Length: 183
Image (cartoon, rainbow, N blue to C red; front, side, top):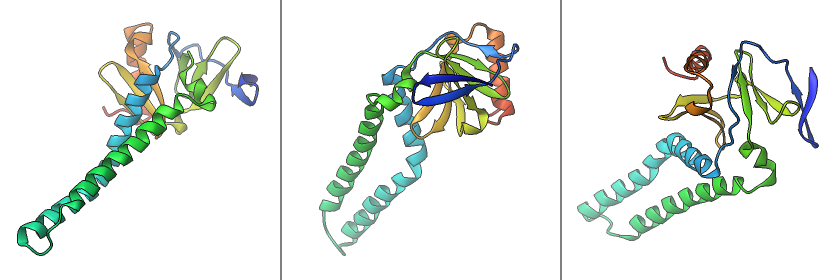
């Protein structure tokens, strides 16, 4: 393995490239697209917690209608709590785009994808390797594939960065083999 460094503080070891790998054009994830993807994934994963404010409002409505306990402050409190919670995460995801340690997420990479790994190259000498085991989830969007690494980390691969339709089909087949894309 050859030692390839993305930055001087974090050595990364590059695996030899596979001649049959799917290669893409260089692409950088725009920060606005990142915030949109992060918030959408946040809402998708936090949907079950939305039942708590709904239950509080429903319980309060029942108590108000039966005359047991009449109050309006719970509606305001629940609404303000939900807005603050969503705003907190929006600020977190927007802040990630400004932090120095997350700058590599927004640099232009050329991807080489095969069954073993995703090789993300800054140039011919610098890059990093991502194993398929690091990817938690994947889905096909209307204009791209999105691979979820964690709550705030994504690999966004638009269809237009692939060099041919054949490469898109091969990539999709790899995603199905890895159970990241529903058949």
